[in-house]
Image (tube, rainbow, N blue to C red; front, side, top):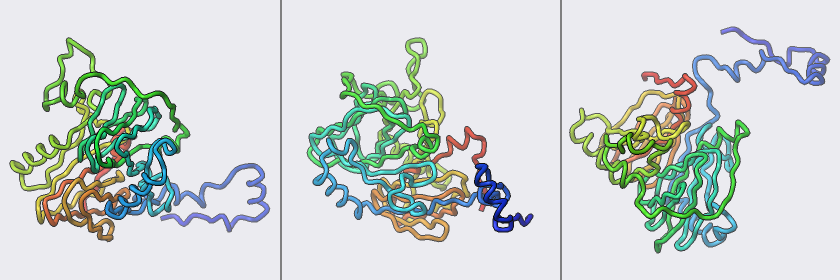
Length: 343
């Protein structure tokens, strides 16, 4: 590999002149922006124990009313960027959000897309463009960029969900903003997952109605788990996985973010290829461990952990376990550089 010159090798008067002209030499920085062979991520694997974070989240409910927070969230920051960073990986934002009984979170709309993985509680709901979406443990709920949404709670115990947003990308592009509005009128019918898209492979007849861009915005966990169990039952012994897709197009549910659910039987291990996409794993239920670039993470129910691009990942379950992996493969596919490498 060619040994490039350094900034210090250049005369001081030349460096001062470049500063005054508002320019800089590329060659001393080239290996930082175009490293050879593979990226050099700032992102480091993070791990957040739900048992450790939950008391802090409940205390936030005591200290800060939702009216003063709009969204009462504790941010899960990438260790490589430090506490307070609005990133869990380069492209994914993660946060744990709390809604208490009787509370409502006001309606707003924003350019980034958001997804909720429901962690605990009953009686919570999200309204997306007038469609009321119940929130049950493990459900995946979409609030796509440009869609109005608000939250409410009709139950008797705290409701918590994991927010997954493509916020870092929109912030980097200087395109991140939101608008506020009144609570939405709710349509008097079940959501699309219970009506139009109740069964896999069946969609409303195209002769009657044109599909929306995001036709299904709630993916009930009970059906996801059922699908995983059937795949595991009749599969080849490998890890059972399903991708969340748009039921009309078969494409990923959102433009930037993708989601994959996986099931590990007791004692089962998984050794996925090295992927160019970063990832966040949320444990719906189960216990086990993951080795990520040599770091061992012991995880349990409702925990969350992350992996950087091209991380070497190994999973092993101590008991039957279900995880959801959020990733940025849809964005990388669109940019034409998604890659998998054998180990």
